[in-house]
Image (cartoon, rainbow, N blue to C red):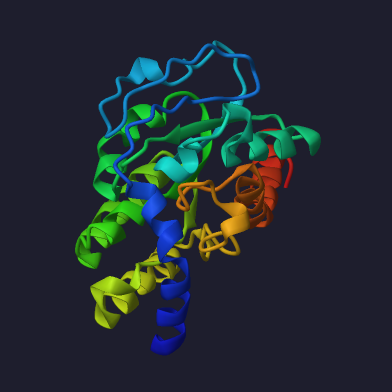
Length: 249
């Protein structure tokens, strides 16, 4: 088991760096409702006004809380994986706005610090896609566990369904850290009974064809694969949430 984890981590270290490369490119929260969005600064310096404001009587929301992978660093807004998920939501006849709450350079602690205002409006589903920067900086797995636990607990206290997207640690921090980091996500998914995307960058990390020239950020094609990784988990949950909102079983 440990050997297989190490193999995966070694093959994906380049992709993991993308979440914390120190690039200060701004990100733009986006949905397909044509809302005006202001590009916030990175490293959790945003104010609540940087996310699309909830509309009176507006649609229910799916929020994706993440780092530069979620923000779509280096890509047009409509090619980020949250925007691609919005297209799939709409094409499936589901009436949700997908909100991109990705911030370049963010750690799990940063995501926790901005959780409350990221959950403005009628949020039904929260996708938590954090941890790449924690791994890059070799932050303790215990801190990652604590931060993600608080995010999940606070979302569930609001009756928001949580999906947890897993990450892997790079091999340079040693086998013990790789294994400890890997175990965080399935353990939390089991503890809090939340759905798990095993590895957000599955089939993307380490692929020259699916990463930009810097070798660390997914291309548009890579973002489509990331959306492919999330969609099978998100779709049935969104369908159930919509049935419940309509009074179905």
